Amino acid sequence: MSATPQSILEDTFGYTEFRSVQRDVIDHVVAGNDGLVLLPTGAGKSLCYQIPALLFDGVTLVVSPLIALMHDQVSALAQLGVEAAFLNSTLSPQAQQAVFDALDTATTKLLYIAPERLMQPATLQRLSQCRIRFIAIDEAHCVSQWGHDFREDYLSLGRLKDMFPSTPVLALTATATKPVRDEIVSRLRLVAPRQFVTGFDRPNIRYDVQSKHAPKQQLHAFLQRHRGHAGIVYCMSRKKTEDTAISLTQAGFDALPYHAGLDAATRNRHQQRFLSDDGIIMVATIAFGMGIDKPDVRFVAHLDLPKSIEAYYQETGRAGRDGLPSEAWMIYGLQDVVRLRQMVDESTATDEFKRNERAKLDALLGWCEVTTCRRQALLAYFGDERDDACGHCDVCDLPPEVFDGTLPAQQLLSAVFRTGQRFGAVYVIDVLMGKTSDRMTKNGHTALAVFGIGRDYTQAQWRSILRQLLVQGFLTVDTGGYGGLALTEKCRPLLRGEVALPLRKDLLKSPVRQKIKKSKVSLNDADSDLFDALRACRKDLASEQGVPPYVIFHDTTLASMAALKPVTKQQLLTVSGVGQSKLDRFGQAFISVIERYLDDRDPATV
Image (cartoon, rainbow, N blue to C red; front, top):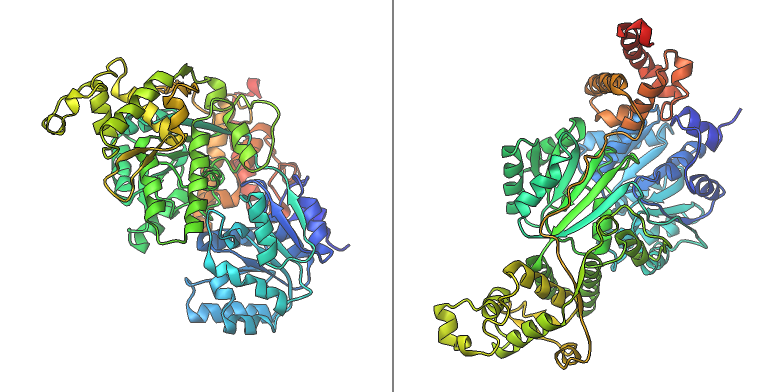
């Protein structure tokens, strides 16, 4: 009997049911059609091209910009008994030749390759001699100059249609607005592609955004409920990454730094520890994360603002790929706003590109300040409307208090104007609070009518008001000079008292929340012991195989084993995530753990 999508799903991958649009996508490309797939991170994009690859009788090319992802996926497929290989800069010339030799013998089903390597004339010439039956282009948003992660090497991929005109092409991404999707279709020259857009919601992720007032203390407080969990902490600079990792280590967390300034051996060692060990916190710049297929990342924390909502969504999507409860936590402040705008203004990009970057940054800032359901606003940005509030974000849990900020806003704007629109935030706030200094006396600003009129507010409250005025476009910053504040045309009706301005009150202390459970499977205390024993068994097997533990089985699969307690191979095969290949290779090891656990229990409780 010939293989079918369902039989491959069950026998090779160990699942009984397709998720979302997976089956529709597979049928579409197997019929020879082009397509574009937009699925949230963790929703199973890889099966959309891996199963067709096993149905086709030739080679499937998987284009990816991510060396880490290539290694990860090839290792995972090897555990399933699938012949796959990759071509990238980490291979020696001899190893590369071995990959091509395997293509000639038709044993390789999937070849992962970076776009810059693929489009080299020598590579294309060599591949033209192979039976290329299907092309999958992962991280396809990289083709768009208006996307958040543009890669110039992707622009030439449209030429694949000239070389392989009858080969179906499938573009896949987790993050693309409607204009970006249109550009993907155009640049890749997809022929009458069907678009599979399922929505952007990651319901297992809780979103939490707070104002930044004591970053170190705020981060430590957040992490207290995540002790023993794997997670990522993103920082904007290399120095902050190093300092934060040291601070967390001193506080008893197992934290490692990761940024482009570290030597390759150190980065690789830290990445392997993150993948292989439990409970590692990676403190990183955005150089880390793409292509990391670790399913049990329980949180992603941002100590600084990312550059756009797209970037934020992509980075937070690295949490909770296993579907279990996870958190996306972020703090931001006035300096983040100023610094990011300065980075855009000082770039050497075209004016059109700068305008686009400013618009994306403004959208992110507006989202940070929302007073209605945060998930609704996030999904709406991508054109994915949600009718009801999620009840699972900081705004839903504790709706922000809004106050009439018209008067303090007028006072602050007046202080900016009367001091000459050339001083920064600290100076202007000092004027409002009546703080005397030699500089202020010399400038004559202690004699201004606005001097000391803002003593009713604290410095933290004034910084919050100022930040919101920047976000809403009442103020701008001279990023090319010394950071002086200046008024915009939008101020006129507000200063004249023609409009009111509601502002949100920032929480200066984050609400205390319960620690997130490690598993959504209900386990009693004894079963938790079994779960831990199964994880120990998995770690030993992973060490023997030289792969991360989750390549053997995900936590969700182990939790199901601990709940169901299968003691035969046939019973174990009914556990989601256990396919025939892994059953044959690892099944008896896990069954033995379960049998020992059952034998050790009090017979009266069995």
